[in-house]
Image 1 (cartoon, rainbow, N blue to C red):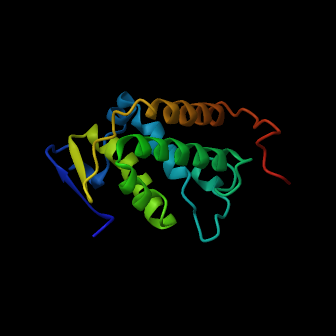
Image 2 (image 1 turned 180 degrees about the vertical axis):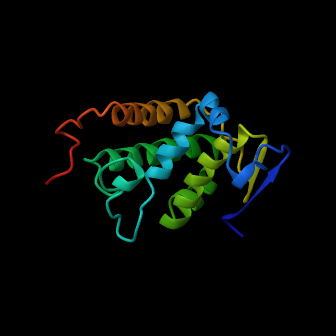
Length: 165
């Protein structure tokens, strides 16, 4: 049915110790920042609890925080990619009728992008056109890398995006 996913691999890159992908390969493809940042944008617990333990401060549901802003950018980028790549009726069905299904397919678009670097091809029903090389991924990379760079440098979060005390 709609939303069934699986992954197939034509490479042994996924068969590393502990099932981990080599981090240097991810970094060379620019996907490590995307995957790490998107992982940080997922709620840690029910209700969108604080996700500071994942490295990005803020709340998923509060766009005024770095975590909320990244989540908003990720949603905007993936929805726009889907809007450009899918027939209108399929876009409406997968990205507008059900919030959970939309989230699943947004995450699938990211997975397709990350898996491609390892010769893996995730599959969905219904089958989606390839989106891993869509030019709008550059907007996500810029946002994710900028956030991670600020966090790595210990930069202060501007007051306009700082969480309320």
